Image (tube, rainbow, N blue to C red):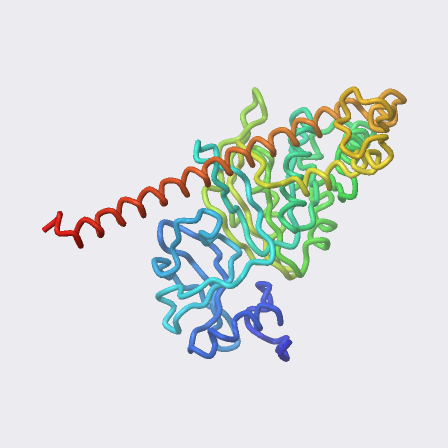
Length: 365
């Protein structure tokens, strides 16, 4: 690995020796590095070096636009840009990517953020905890390659420390191996602890509308960079305050990607993430009598024995089964779509071959 100057202008945005090595061929072509801070309809904002500092440029993305939804540029990507900052010429390989399935019938994946170190799942305490949804977010977070973190927002609305303690304990039980923090952007409780955890890396803030993400982003950044709207009284849900994914520098170092509220959080090729989220079930399964035990009604099933003995909540097992089924269904739909596309391409090639053959025979003039 080549020597890396720690005083590089983009270091505060996550630039390091690894990205510098990936960028080396583009540097030889006279291009400059930049990090995408916002994407909007064929163009994107990037921060690029400008002397000892940085500047933001608006660049055209037509040269790197692809029909593959998983390779479409997104906030957090590193890019090679022409010196004038007019065109994105190439994208650097991603280290991590937070991907969910879209709601379309094409069974496509959508990348929400790239090159992320921490995936912060924001959950509002103004409404009843939905542990199943937390497990769903954590599954995608683990699968992305980032380190998940659950942040329980609006802690000031909880009536007393005992109730808050129970809510934290319930969340921790559904999040093995994951740090859980309770914070209040209103009072400042826990914000400094969260800021210290996120300092120096790239974090993405995820959650439903009304989870308090924009308010939390403002508290972490130290100024009102994101607009805030009140949640609805009847269900605690909010409107989409953030409409694009934005990369925001943090005063203590590192950057934060704020995302719009997510209504649908479908799994996408996340079998490994399911295993990590339900690590205690995976560990129990190693003691099942049969290596392919489905934990349904098989004799000698250690998982079912744990449920019967009260060591494993039935809710956890039900959630585990549900996410495995969903992931398998998405994988099957994706495989079917790929097979259909291959058949379509093959038919086009056959048609083109017949056309060329007919032309050679003189049937077509």
